[in-house]
Image 1 (spheres, rainbow, N blue to C red):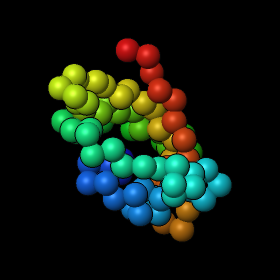
Image 2 (tube, one colour):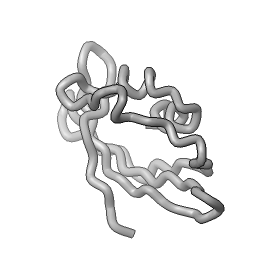
Image 3 (cartoon, helix red, strand yellow):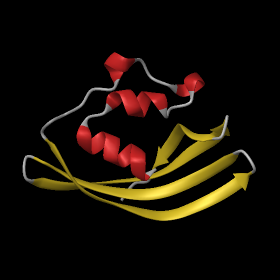
Length: 95
């Protein structure tokens, strides 16, 4: 989760796509980087194993757009494939 957050802050869409499970991966053109977003921090609230090959991570990412602060609160789902945890999808929490 932390490496994917860092990739978002740096605009590393190549890394984001490489850490997305193929069955759920968006097209590269659908994953644009917005340079007006200023990322402020990540708080991992919980890691929950589901079974040996599935887990969830609940996090809050803080960011600013145009001087206004926002929060992204999500529970993400990951699957373990070939020794690597890959993002599948997530549920965004209303704040």
